[in-house]
Length: 69
Picture (cartoon, rainbow, N blue to C red):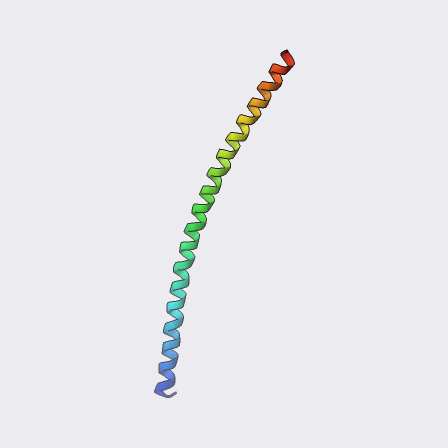
């Protein structure tokens, strides 16, 4: 194998390793973002369920008052 071919191979391996490292870092960032979004989604769901429960309580109270009138 000529030295030029070896140098080309070495450069391609180096480029591949760098690309893999960048992809690994990007993957970790995406995992963190995904975890943050899941947590945010759970918080919104919890708050929405709280509001829905308040509406149910209001409807229940209104129907109780209506049946006593």
